[in-house]
Structures are given as structure tokens and as C-alpha cells.
Image 1: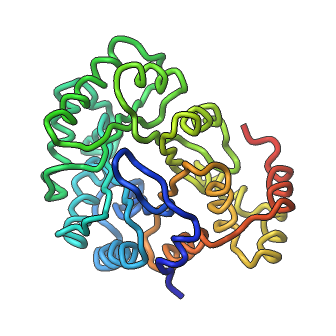
Image 2: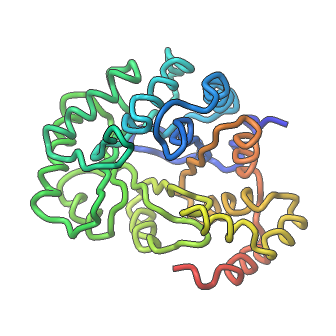
Length: 298
């Protein structure tokens, strides 16, 4: 059973800068090969997944040129170009992959500019809805961070991107960035089992900024599997007629109105399951149960 626009509209919408998008979106990272490196396992299915996402009402897709590298953006262009007018494609810069697949910094001002241009070329577009500055080392923000941010501001002023976002940052990064420019979204690790970015989410909520949790079902794999096999989730899922994954995603949507989901998958079946989470309604008892099951999340 596929998801529909009606499913997605139950969760409402929020803004990324000047774009209003449905809160259930799609993260395209997993379309690359294992460990986000190399070609997809099944190229035809990857293209079908992208088309099914848009056909279901998704109008927010997250990607990056270094996924693959040079793989995921090419798939998005092949599957969806020319893009629907309401589709917000959001990418990120600040990293690259070497020939062995290692993730390396690519975050000097000139490299950030090149990363934006590479995204535009591979996606076949002249403008991104937003670009996220990916911070790899989580060091305290300082002059280097300011210089990186200034590079993205120039790209926005030149019309290459509509908005600037941040990824993998602290609340201090966010506040420092806001002193210099508008921030339209923040992508941080956040899920039922890991709420260490709760302060960043709270600040985004106060500021009216979209918060986009990556790894919304848990990371690394062991943490995710432990979370989704929690006996309490299974019992609650039976009562609400939802899978453990749908409950985890519904919890995020319920947590704050500015949360935007971008769960990823390689298959249309899993895509439909994820998107139908937008229609799962948590009651007070469910919220209490989920808080109790994951009371040690930090």
C-alpha cells in the first residue's frame, strides 16, 4: 500500500526559508551504495523510489554531492528533472569522499563555493532551496566558522541558494550564525534514543527555524536496532496500528511543530511505511509510554 498526499498532509507543513514544505520528506543518502559509497544496489529501484516519493506528495528532498560521491544527485536529476515547482531540494557542503570512501573535510571558503557549484551542476539546476554547512569536528565556533558562513552568504547573495542551513552543530554555533545571517534550517542527530541536540531543537523552535533530524530511527545501526525492538514499542504499535519505525517517526513529528522528517530508504515499500507515519496520531498515554521506554536517552 503506497502513501498518499492525504497521508502527508495530516502532519502539516513548515517553512524552509521562503519555501513551505510538507513535514514528511525524503533523505536520499541511502540511494548510494553501502556506506554511502559507490553506485546503488538497484539503480532502477532507486529511480522508482524518488519518483514514488514525489508522487506521494513529498516536496522536500535532502541530498549532497558527496553521497556516492557523484551518485545520488545524478539519480535525483535523472528521476525528477525538470523539477516540480514546489520541490525543495536541500543539499550540504563541507565534506568530500576520497577514493576509499573516507569522509574528509572540504570546508575552506573556496571549497565550500566549489561544493555548491558541483551540487548545482549535478542536479541540473541554477539554484538550491537551501544549502547546509556541515561541521565535521564540532569544535567551538570561531573566526574560521565565521569565514565559512560568509562564503555561503555570498553564494546566497549571488542567487545560487535561497537559504543557508547548518548541520551537526551546537547551540553556540547556531546563535553565533544568527548574529551574522538568517538560518533557515538545522540538521542534527536526534531521535527517540538520542536527544543530545534537544537544546538546539529548542532554540530552533523559539526562533522559528526548521529542525531536520538526521538518522531519525537511531544511529549507529546497533542503537537503531535496539530502539526499534524495544518491547514497549511493539505493544504500543499494536494499540495504535503502527510499526515501531512509524512510532519513532511520529514521535518526532509530535515533538515540535518545526520538525521536518527526512528518513531514507532504498525501497518503495519502506518509503510508503515511513511516509504513512505522518498519519499516526499519538495520544497522551502514548507520549507518556514513549518517554518512559526511552527515559535514559541523552
